[in-house]
Amino acid sequence: MKIDKAFITRLQNKDRKTQLVFYKFLSAKMYGVCLRFANSRDDANDILQEGFIRVFKHINDFRGEGSFEGWVRRTIVNTAINFYKKEKKRGYRVELDYVKKKYISGESAIEKISFTELLNIIRELPNGYRTVFNLNVIEGYTHKEIGKILNISENTSKSQLSRAKSSLQKKLLEIKTKENID
Amino acid sequence: MINPDQNINELLRQKFQDFEPVPPEHIWDNIEKTLDAKKGFFWGNRKYYAAAVFLIALFSIGYFGLYSTSDINVLSNIEEQEIIYQEKSIVEKEIISESTEIIAEKAVDNGETETIEKPEITEKIIIESVIVDDKTENNVSVSQEKKINDIEKLGLFELQDGFSKPSNNLTIENMNTLSISNIYSLSYGQPYSKNEEIFSEKSNKNNNGHWENTIFINPEFSLTNLDSVTILNSYSLGVETSRFFNENWFVRFGINASFTGDKGFAKIDYLSIDFMGTYDDVYDVTFDTISGVITPFYHTKTVEVWDSIRHISVSEVTNRYLFAQVPVLLGYKNKIGQLNWYVYSGPAIGFQVAKWIDEPSVEGKDIEIIDLDNRLPVRSTVNYQLWIGAGIEYKLGRSTAIVLEPSYRHYFKSLYSDADYKFNTSGFALRLGFNYKIGH
Image 1 (cartoon, rainbow over the protein chains, first blue to last red):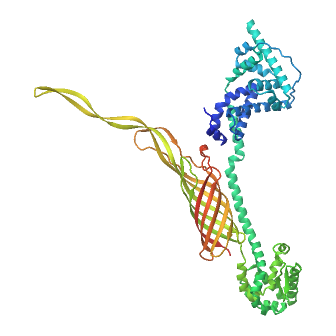
Image 2 (cartoon, each protein chain N blue to C red):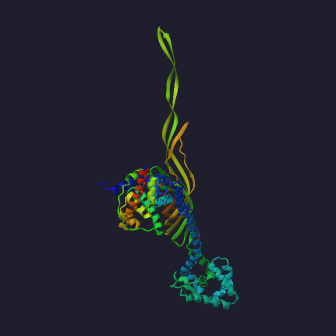
Image 3 (cartoon, rainbow over the protein chains, first blue to last red):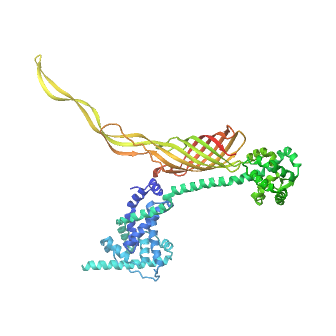
């Protein structure tokens, strides 16, 4: 499907059929993003729902600069971040201590494990780590950008990422070790 | 050396690039419900809100118009008292020379029978005064003098030869300090019993607030060109009522039945069994000897060839609609004499009352339509317009006139519900009307 100017105009005119076509076209891809950011599948469902509502509601904010899919993706990511910002207000704390990097090869494990397993590993990360990890590693945001989005310092973002990777690598190593034993 | 961190990042990115799990079906239902709920709160019912606003506006104008009539009449009567007084000065001279008491006595003598025939408010109060006066002459002079003095105290009227006359201080602003009863009591100053005919005639002329009803008939020509749609001229017949609040300003509202339509095309993709032609089919061959030569004879029959042929035809379609248009317009009229001009502007709502949608079809038997693409969009049930117009009025008589109004109409919302046809359109209308004035 091609998302051209006419299609976006129809979306801006709140045409329901076009909205459905658009949702069907992008929902799977965006659901993947939501699952990565979310603690659970239920949270991912909520984020996807809220994200698409925001997309439809604020579609007129899209100025035609850059890719439309990229704009939608950013909206979904922002929704996910806001979702956990609410949670943060309920008691989530960011740990600021420095973590020494330890490179443990988990490459083969990543290649071998399924999406579900990898997703479960990512989900087990604390909210802050997971968010920074997703934004930096998968979405390609810089630490400066992450700092602005999450209202944390650049160093905190780096620290969070190190911890996230360390935790992730540890889990991957466990999987690798288990495979070797098996 | 390859940074293992980079490798893992890249691997994870690649891994998730194709990660597209199907979300549960209920999510779209929830999204749709939320969007509908937000739409339904205001936007879903906007046509009803718009209708309600228009009705309120109409009732407000009607109520305000009726309510303000009496005040305007009273004020305009007072404003022109001075003029009346001057105009009638010759007639009044004889009466003015008499004393207040004598006039009161005259009123007692012959006033009742003369004044009771006139339903004017000012005269009615005079009658009441006369009845009171009938009891005792002293009361008459006392009560009458008191009222005149009260008015004098306000500085708005002066007592001259026993009659109240509007002073130079009388303006609309200080009129607020004057009670209605005091205003009515001004009639004491008028030589009512002798000059009632003149006075009545004058008081009728004093009234500027009035109603005008106009029957309009008009064609409207679209100024908007669309690629695949031709907006046909519309023809309207309507009745509009104007309420004049003073000599110049008016509010007009009414209803117009507008018959309009669109012309466009439909693409029809169909199969038909078509006659392709004939050929001679040899069904038998015989041989015979003619003049010693063996000659073959071909026995043939004509065979018709029919084939299933796919066609794409473009068919012209015309949709027609009947709209009820309700304008609420504010206008200014410049009265010159027999030929007057005016301008107006205001919103209007068009409600679709009926529609006749053309169904594209193909003539012929054994036709199978594969695909039908009707390029003619259907109009929305409600449209919103801004009317700007001017008019020339030619008076035929005291209460009748013919009017000619060129006007421009801008349609805010697209005429069509189809998302591909979201265009603001505009039109030019030339209205011919017959105007009937009610009131003074």
